[in-house]
Image (cartoon, rainbow, N blue to C red; front, side):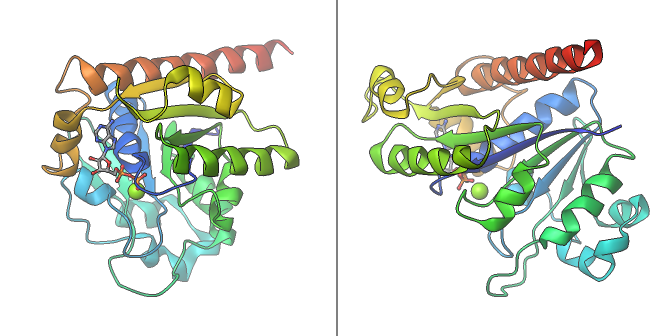
Length: 252
Ligand SMILES: Nc1ncnc2c1ncn2[C@@H]1O[C@H](COP(=O)(O)OP(=O)(O)O)[C@@H](O)[C@H]1O
Ligand SMILES: [Mg+2]
């Protein structure tokens, strides 16, 4: 069966894609979905190993020699394991090689091999301007764009959403992250500016973020309120949306 693929991108760096990808994957895994987390950041730019407190021995670079005939056993040898809850990470390569990206021709074999063992795949993508992102979005069950409540992030997001939606209407989830009462833009201004209501508004929460970014521990199951509670509610909402779409598709 084809796994549910949640793919997170952004129009600007540092908005919280990786932090949210790691914690979203933990929520899905804790609900009992066999889950894989893919760090498709360019070589030497990935952070998901840090955010899960792992020291992966292998990365997607190790798959490149077999990329067109990828099998589940190749993934078994390459994925790093997070234990509580069980979650598999495909890490980015640590070696500094300019512009080394996961190859587009590897996507179909990768998702096919993942579908043997995983019901949910969370993908941490490069920026919306990247060709790789565009190609992964075509596989995504739920494409997610993360934006912070400031004009540079909003303006770039609005431009990229307009550009991509001209090609086809993507079922975007628009997530405003790091929202605080004193944010540079109010929620009303954000709605007017993006001409859309955000699907989730996640609070600025330095303590929760630090647990993941500073200590390598996803915060989502350890804390009740703040960002953790908001991410759990949002994850629930995303899953409910996917399930209702699946039911509709079955009926049709
Ligand atoms: N909701 C939040 N509250 C506080 N800090 C956050 C929040 N989301 C992200 N951050 C911080 O923003 C920084 C960038 O996050 P990261 O997930 O690495 O961004 P990206 O992957 O989009 O480049 C990190 O230092 C993280 O702690
Ligand atoms: Mg990142």
